[in-house]
Length: 87
Image (cartoon, rainbow, N blue to C red; front, side, top):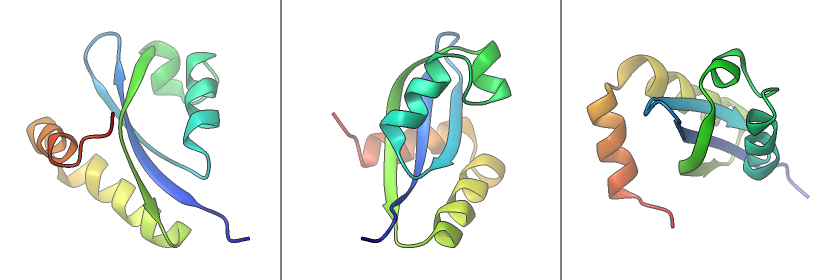
């Protein structure tokens, strides 16, 4: 079975957005909640997953993570989340 690759965006308690890469979104979110997922989410507690997208390869996912983190403004990220909303 092929490994899955995801990029995700979390909302934090202080209304910031965090973008990351993982092969298991739910497991990674649980780590973030425990303060073990990333330095940023240790200081900015996540409250929910706003967006996630699956990719065929790790390379594609990491490329998209980079684009979101470094090329998109908060406004652009919120538009992207709204246009492909997950419930």
